[in-house]
Length: 116
Image 1: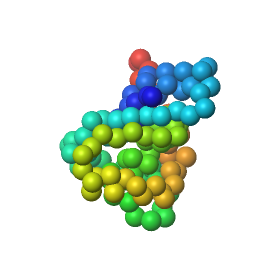
Image 2: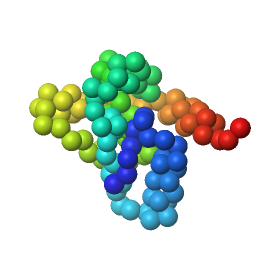
Image 3: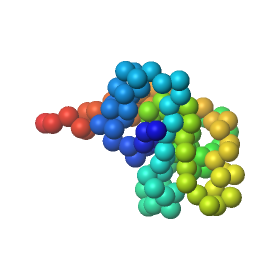
Image 4: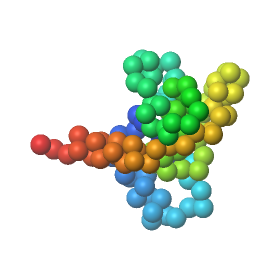
């Protein structure tokens, strides 16, 4: 199980992908797609819907959760909650992630991380 999602730094993303490449597990699981809490201020200021292809409207939480499956690429994402409403919102995985936006995001993370 690895950390996943839009709040994961490039070091963790790349380390997780290296581990998966070398270990070759049958399935990769992840956790903490919201960096701990969907009530954090970042989710009010940032709209993760830009990572989705435009099909059906998604909430910010749904967009962040769906995007977490690609950062790094995983087969399952674990969330911790005792809110039935929160779980119901996350069930809707009909959204497609825009691979080009994810690629550009990763490139931005790498460029920002490189020393000047």
